[in-house]
Image (cartoon, rainbow, N blue to C red; front, side, top):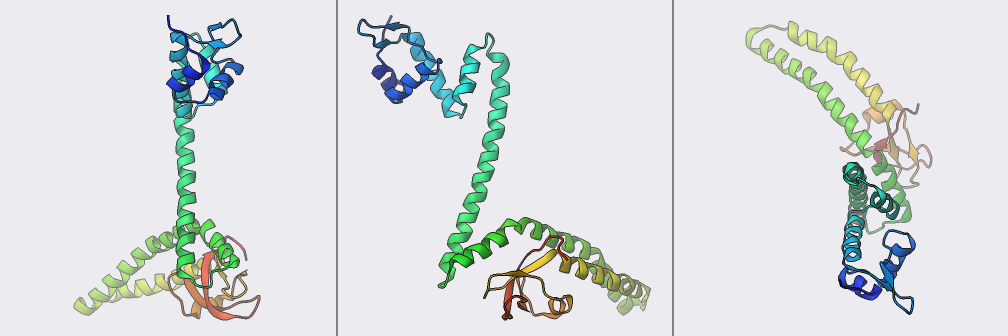
Length: 241
């Protein structure tokens, strides 16, 4: 039967000597013998065990979990549960990493596009990106709610023009006006704006917001904090009054 030193074990499994020694101190890879000088000696079974440990470490299992698994009389009964949990944890970590990479990409894009990029600009981006999903969900909700009203309007105009039937158009007007008022008020209560001058988040009056010139992501407003008038970035404002 072959015998291996700590260094030979480390080389065969592509790990460091300190790693092999650490596994010994943790009790998951005890050497099968000691030399006359007190050096650790391992056999073929120990080598196979080290390869198993290295594989389990590569898929992310902790030392404690590996130690518990190796002590099990029937490891097959628990390994599936451990692997399922590890898979779940890794998928969550991957999701978190994807979010971080997305934020890095957005920040790099903003830095490249703005010659006067400042630390305050990073703060604006943080506010914008933190609740962007909520804002996007609201936009989608508005679009879906508006579709039936738009369809009713189109049908009313078409039937009025072709067949002289106008009750559908009247019905649309009766429904559309209160519906538009409701959506406008709801929209106003759930958005806020970032001033590009003082970087404060504020909410204008309903009248100013409703009649202001705007783009899909900005609106021309007067900041309530510093008085600056210009296009302000729209962000999620929650349920603040």
